[in-house]
Length: 251
Image (cartoon, rainbow, N blue to C red; front, top):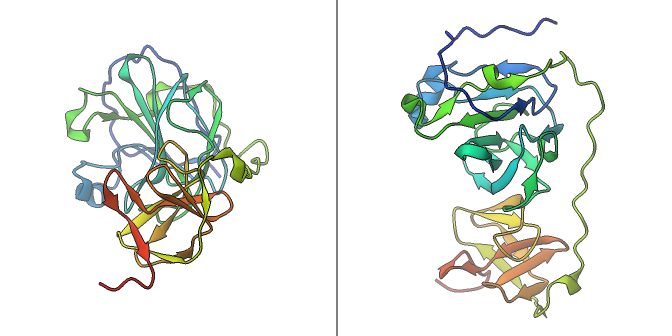
C-alpha cells in the first residue's frame, strides 16, 4: 500500500550539522503539523513530530549523542527517551514499551534504544519521533519537522522481525544495604514510576496507578525504595516527598 503523503505545507528550516538516520523502517502514519484540533491542548499549531506505525518494534537512535532522559509523561508522551546531540539538538522517542538505556549513556546512530508501544496519549501502538532545535520555530516550542533531515531510503515494510528485548534479571546482591521487608504498600500519588533499580538513574519499565497496592519484598536504602518483584522497584519517598504508605495506615 503506498505511503500517504503529507498535507502540511513545507516550511524552510535551518541546517542541522548532524546527520539523522531513520529511527525505524515502519511507515509514517502522521506527519508534522497535522491535526491541529488535537494538539492545541498542548499549545502546538499541529502535530509536533512524525508518527510511525510500529507495533512493539525496535526503535533506533537517529544520531550519535547522549541519553539525556528516560522518563514517563502521563497523558502525553508516556514512556519516552530524550537524546542530546551536538549543537544542543534533541531527539525524542515516545509512547514506548520499554527503553534498555539510562541517562548519561553514550549512543550511536542506529543503536537500539527502545521498543515501541501505546503508552501515554496514544490511540494505538506507534512511535512518535520528535526533533527539537531550541530557539527555532517558536510556535512549536522549538520542534521542527524531522522529515527533511532524515537520510537514506525507508522501506514501506519492516525488513526484519523486531528483536524481543527481555529486561535483565537483577540480582539482589547488586544492591548492598537492602533488608527484607514484609507488608503491603499503597501508592499515594496520582501515579508512580516503576524502575529497574532502586534510584532515578535506572530506566522506567512501567508505572503504578494511584491507590494500587504492592507487596514489598526488600527495602533499599537509597531514598527508601522497595523491590516488590524481582527487578521492579518503586520509591516510598524521594527527595523528601512521600509516594507510598503502608496499606493499613490510618489517615
